[in-house]
Image (cartoon, rainbow over all chains, first blue to last red; front, side, top):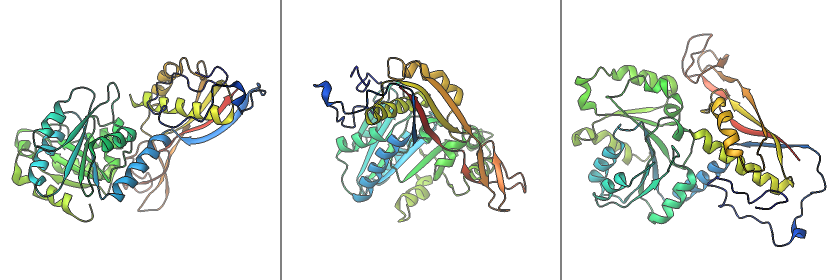
Length: 254
Length: 113
């Protein structure tokens, strides 16, 4: 760490090593900033806290657009059925278009293994203690997967309805998956996520007779938060219920 | 606890600013946190000292300016104060108020040496 200005300190920020640091620490003389002013002073920053993540997200989005990659960011609470939905989607589509998957979990490769069992390439990102994927993670993963042009890129975020809502990854759409074994009031309880999503998938719809989940109430709550949100109902384990979802993936608007 | 990730991002900005503006130590960090942003001011305060430890902002004071949520009703076009994103318009009761202010999380200014 530079003892004069403190730059190069042992920040825990995962972003810090990524931007080149034009500072020559070999010679004190190369410091060109004003060390003679030791009084307190005010510095106006006026910068979004997420500016760095957002700039990586913009780079990802530009890359996806240039290469015709359709990127979706799947979010839900743990156990809503994101991985099962992805496996079913891959099995339905893998012979018609290239599909790649980025799996985010705090620990283990288990979800990536489930995806790879379908024959599709997947990269697992273990976020450790972090509760979300960030745009830098995605940029790195896309390079490591060598995602070809015109692919469908499915990003399965960490199971969490709070934190991933803040972190733009550069995706075309956030897709929030909610299962009928959860509460139908989740859109009101976690409004940021339902506001950020363009599509809500109500999953495990075949279990509806065994729950007191009220589909109409759930949709009404979601539209209160986000009047434009689209809604699909399906069961990832029942292939015939996937038709509208597969059509959604295929529409030019998507 | 995405507040920790956000604070790490704040620290990263402080280090970049230190390099660009030539300061050695941060005495005060002023953040603007919108009432409708997905961040809890108390959680930021809780994590701030831990994240800033051993950095140029160790022992810095954290000041949080709360920005009220504000929007406009799509039906009656009146201005609406919002405590949460899904509050109905308090003039006509409609949902789907368009948010105009209160979603941001910004580093406003610093006092440095």
